[in-house]
Image (tube, rainbow, N blue to C red):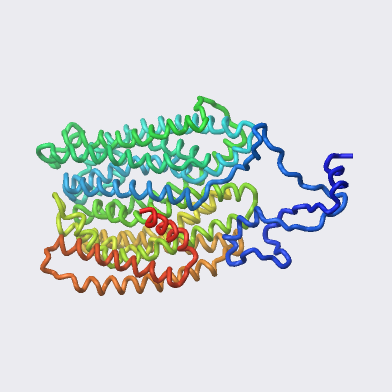
Length: 603
C-alpha cells in the first residue's frame, strides 16, 4: 500500500484540491467575472474544495526543505512592474535622445549639414535591419524562450546563434563601409539641394555602428528571454549622454562645417561622426556585465541544428519584411531631398517626437509582454495569447489616444518652442510642428501595428507580417511620389508625414482582420468600447486645451508664446482627458493611476 493510500485510510474526510480548468465556470462560483484578463491569475491558482473521492490520489503539501522552509514556486515577473520600470528608463532615454537632436540643430543648424548627418546616421540602422535587426527584434526572443526547455537551458543554442550572428555582422559592416558612396547615391536625390559628398563623409564614420547595433540587439534578446529588462532599457541613456557630450564639443569648436568642400577630415565632421559611433559602442558594452551575471557564458560554437534551420527559415521572411519597408524609406528620403533644405531634418525630428509617447509606453509594454506571448504560443495556449493581445491593445489605447489628440493641437507650439534656439530658424521649426500635428492621429494605429507583428512572430509566423508590409508599401509609395507633384517644396515634409500616418492606419486594420481570421474571437468588442470611451475623453480634452490657448496673449513674443501655449494646453488637455477616463471608471487606466497615486503618497 502506498503512503498516500495509507494516509487516506487514516483520514476518510480528507479533501482533494482539483485545479480549476481555464474557461470552465465553477458552480456557484464567487470568483470575479468582470474581465477574463483579470481572471487569469485565478485560472492558474483557484481550486474547488470537493469531498474526497475514495481511492483517488490526495495532493500532499510540499515537503519542507532542509532549512525547514517551504519551497517557493518561481513567479513570473509582473507585467505591470516590468513595463513600469522600463517606461521610466525609456522616458529618460527618449528625453535625452530628443535633447541631443535639439542640440544638434543648435550646433550645426537645420539645413544641409543636418540633413546630411541624418541621412548618414540612418544608414547603419537600415543596413543592420536588413542584415538581421528585424530578425533579432522579432523572432529571436520567441526562439530563445522555447530553447529554455532544452536540457542545458538553451545554452548551446544561444551560443550557436551568437556565433553565426556576430560573423554575419562583421562581414556586413566591412562591406557596408566600403560601399558608403553607393548607399549615399541610393538615398540622396542629387538633383535637389542635398550634399551627397557630405553625406558620404559622415557615412564612412557612422557605418561601423552596424556591428555594435547587432551586438546590442543580440545581448538584449538574450537578457529579455531571461526576463531581465532593466539593462537593455538603460543602456541607450548612456549612448545619448556620450552623444550629447560630443555635440557640445562640436558646438564650442570654432567655425562651421564646410558644405562647399566637404571632407571626412573636417574637424567638426570627424568629431561628430566618431563621437556618435562611440555612443553606440558604449551602449553595446553596457550589456556585457549583466549578461555574465545572468550565468550565460559566451562561447564560439559552430553547428546547425533543427532550431538553427528554423531560425534561418523565419529569418528569410524577416529580411523580406525589412527589405520591403526600406523601399518605402528610400522613396521617403528621395522625395524629402527634392524639397526645401531641412526637410529630412524636419521629418526626422517630427518622427522622433511622434514616437516619443510610443517609445515610453508601447516599447516598454511590448518588451515585457513578448516573452509571455512567446510562452503562450509555444504552449499552444491561444486563450492566453489573445488575452495578452487584448490587454496590450486596451492599455495602449487609453494611454496613447489622449496624447495623440493633444499633440494635434500643440504640434506647432512644440516645433517653435523647441527648435528656434541656436542656429534653428522659425520657418523650419513651424514646418516641423505642423508635420507632427498632421500625423499625430496615427499614434495608436502605429502602436497596434507593432503589437500585431509581435503576436505573429510569437506564433512563429514571419510570413504574414511581410505580406502586410508589402500591402502597406504598395499604398505608401504612389502617395509619396504624389507629394512633389501636388505640394510646394516647403510642404513636401507635411505630405510625407501624412502618407506615413495613413499607411499605419491601413496596416492596423489589415493586421487586426488577419489575426481575427487566424485566432478567432479577439475580444474586439471590448477593445472598440475602450477606444470609443477614450475618443470621447480626448475630444473633451482637446476642446479644453483649445479654449485655454485662446487666452494666451500674442504680445509675449514668438518663442515664449509657444512655450506658454505648449505648457498650458498640454497640462489642461491631458488632465481633462485622463480625468474624464477616470470619471468613466475605465478599468484599463487603473494600473497607471494607481502607480501615480502611490508615487504621490510617497512624495
